[in-house]
Amino acid sequence: MEPEEARRIAVKAAAETAAMLRDNACTPRMANVIRGETTRADQMAEEYAVEILKAEGVKAKIIGEEGGVYGEGDIVALIDPLDGSVNYLNCIPWASVSIALAPANAKTFRDILAGAVAPIFTGHPLSFSRGGGCRLGETLVRDKTKPYKKMVAVYVEHPSAVEGLKSFMSRFKGFKVRSLGSAALEIAYTAIGRITLFLDIRSKLRNVDTAAAAGMLLECGGAFIGSNGEEPGLDLSGVARIGSVIASLDRELAREAYKAVGPQMRRPGSQPL
Image (cartoon, rainbow, N blue to C red; front, side, top):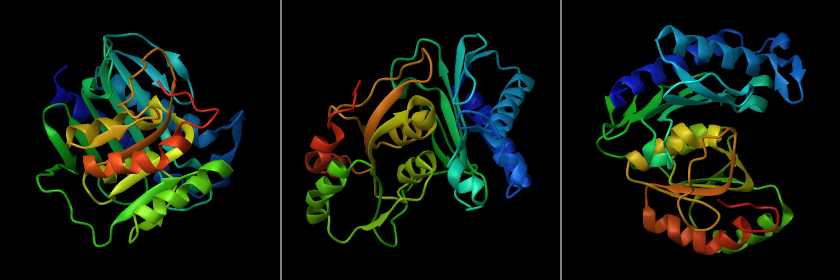
């Protein structure tokens, strides 16, 4: 499969799944728990996305947040059917569908053929194809957006990480700090410059959460840094944890951020690849 064809399919699957979720938003039945933390919304979205891939003739091994690993093929589809589920189920309009398509032998995020992150409630899908650049809707992003204000998206949970942010904030004064609730969408917006820096130091991010957005960030020329200070590898054996990450188009800024919060990213309990 050629990268641009993969991008077209990823955009179609992500955008149509997002539309289905939007049509069913703010209805109590979508919050019905199927098992564990999987709700009806999660399950419906993954099934919907997989059916679109099949209809497009894609024979793929699926790595899905809800269904785990199933199917087979030379292509691997990494699917986060509802990123920002807490927002979605509380009828807060910031959530997304994330789909990446990679060759079965991919070892890094740079090997991903294409990916798409589709906002559920508003905005155009963000996508990329390997070697083909990044797109907002179908418009090729040639000049990265200069933000109105420099924004950093920060995700923390552990008390020691919160304490460690003091060092970060002292170095990066003037940034507007946000934590919006859909990591894939925020990394994708980082890829086109609308968010200046993304920090997630919860040690929780997984390959399905980040594949499409991280692939886009790297295609756009940005830096994606894991807990060990290096670019994380891509595990296609199943749903796999990446851990804490830093993302930015400004590679020097990303390295400076790592100097400030690296110890918190490597805290006990973190398992960098």
